[in-house]
Image 1 (cartoon, each protein chain N blue to C red):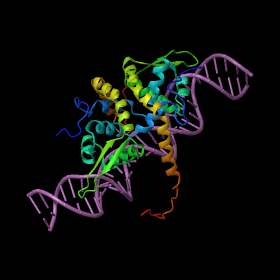
Image 2 (cartoon, helix red, strand yellow):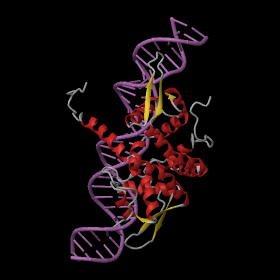
Image 3 (cartoon, rainbow over the protein chains, first blue to last red):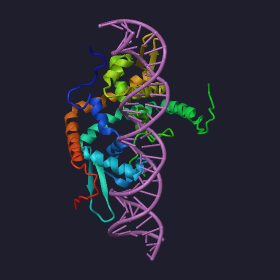
Amino acid sequence: MPTAQACTPTLPGFTCGLDATLRVIAGKWKPLILYFVAQGGPTRYGALRRAVRDVSDKMLIQQLKELEADGLVKRTDYKEIPPRVDYSLTPLGRSLAEALVPLCSWGTENMAEVTRVFAERDALNSQRPEPSGQSTRIE
Amino acid sequence: MPTAQACTPTLPGFTCGLDATLRVIAGKWKPLILYFVAQGGPTRYGALRRAVRDVSDKMLIQQLKELEADGLVKRTDYKEIPPRVDYSLTPLGRSLAEALVPLCSWGTENMAEVTRVFAERDALNSQRPEPSGQSTRIE
DNA sequence: CCAGATACTTACCAAAAGGTGCATACTTGT
DNA sequence: ACAAGTATGCACCTTTTGGTAAGTATCTGG
């Protein structure tokens, strides 16, 4: 009855390896953070903030804390007076970052395609921004 | 000024390839769906529903529609009377699924570690369920 | 002396994500 | 005759997620 059994449903809690990974990198910015830190080596908070554009302080800090708690990044506080802190990857984090490389490549290779599809989607969505009951029907 | 410049910031809208990929597979179940369909070939809705455990009908349908709209999966409706529909991957979807393999492996290899870390986190969370204003200061 | 940078923290709020349950239309099994 | 399975759609509601803006302590540059 192997209908769509995939991965390896060994440990309890996760349906498969992919499931386990997804729980760790869940969060809008985590993969990006991992990837940036993987590239730049130890990265200061401010630099990360500027690299991962559009991220807010709150989010960046929060995700960094989770990544740290999950043993993927290491936080180093230099206890200096204008605060200085940087983040680097643990061995575990480094291995995860490597597993992300194919995703990055895929995105780079198919970016045009993705851009196109998203443009279509957005076009459809933006032609019904009317909150007034007028059902501008497309039919 | 290459502080933490990574990937390839070519097309507008995405900071890098990884960013592009993440937008496509954003959604709690999409990677799992892709992966399961990649394994089983054309998969019926019901089978997918049972394979991706804990997913609700609403969510599964929704994510399938998005994946279809993004050109990653193909929906085939056999127009039969007890409804019969199955989902398969497009070439684009297949390539993405392949890029997911390392993530799956990573999860399988580090599942014990991940399980452990998550157990600790959950243990900490469940020992402070006090909603009373008493600021149990740690100092 | 005040603005700005540093690395955060917190409170408050809006939006998105996700869950539950009911409905459909038709068939098969009991 | 009736429950169950098939693949969805829809309304309602809760939870999670994420954003904004303000505050903190200390130093440097103008």
